[in-house]
Amino acid sequence: MPIADATSVDLAGIRLRNPVILAAGTAGSLDEMGDVLDLSKVGAVVTKSITLQPREGNKTWRIVESRHGGMLNAIGLANVGLDAFLKDIAPRVGSVPCAVIGSVAGFSPDEYERVGGAMDAVEGLAGIELNVSCPNVHGGCEFSSDAALLADLVRRVRGAVTRKPLLVKLSPTAVGYRDAATGETGIAPLARAAIDPGSVHGAGGEARATGARRRGADALCIANTMPAMAIDVEARRPRLSRGSGGLSGPAIHPVAVKLVHDAYTQVCKGAGVPIVGIGGVMRWEDAAEFILAGACAVQMGTALFVDPRLPVRVAEGLSAWVRRQGRSSLAGLVGALEREA
Image (cartoon, rainbow, N blue to C red; front, side):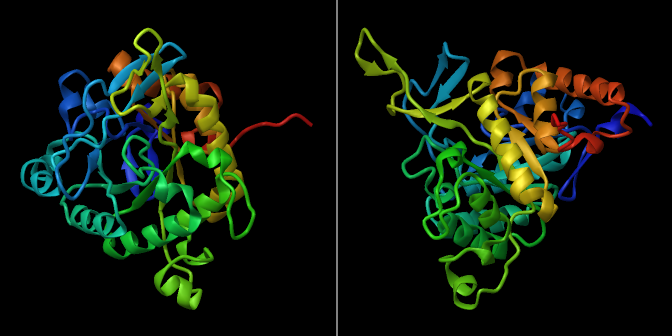
């Protein structure tokens, strides 16, 4: 079997030539990373998160390096807004030599619904990623930190997104989540809310009134950046203009691996819902950890700031790993974590 076939991925109906995806907010609005990276050698690129209205984002400084292994950002969802995206960017989606996934953000269920519906109609977009977990805007993590709120949001967006696969991007704050209705802890109740909104007690609309099970996310993206802060001790001021932001990079990788493993074993494996692992992928071994934990694909973001050629190296490393493992495809290694007796 050719190498390209061995590492190709079916992500909820989105065909990827390999499992490496460029994460939202790190690769420009669409194809800007193509100036320094051959996009035909990655699986997909995720657009910047698009909101209903254009946003300038937070003031400088809004990206700072962390000596603890990664970077903090508080971009503030800076983007051109839906109208400009549809007019100036969407017509070029078909020219990108890899799959393109549109990222949707908002500050109310109505905004998410309107942007998601508009994105669903964009010709050439392979899927929609719902960013419900941005920690560097006011209330950014709200929807991903409560199962009932998340279920209601996904249910509404799913009503508008009918043509394309829907991916929901969760927050690493799920590590400390406790569901008020059931007492269940960790990422499982949030994953279940995203996948099956109608099963969640307290979800709004018809799901709450009838208990009917509603179709939700076709895949989960786990996880976004970790809420964090850095301080300039001489100036006695936060290093980010907003005060706090999101930590990404190697520092959060083990946390993200645990979240992927928990979501896979407790919810997604049984539901047949794929996972995209996100957090600190700098080498192929990092990506392989996500695969063994239960992800079928990975996203890379912080790595692009270090060396934009790293995604190609990760894809090549995964291909060689599949061969050494004696598998005909990467799919045979998803969740294939061996345990000691």
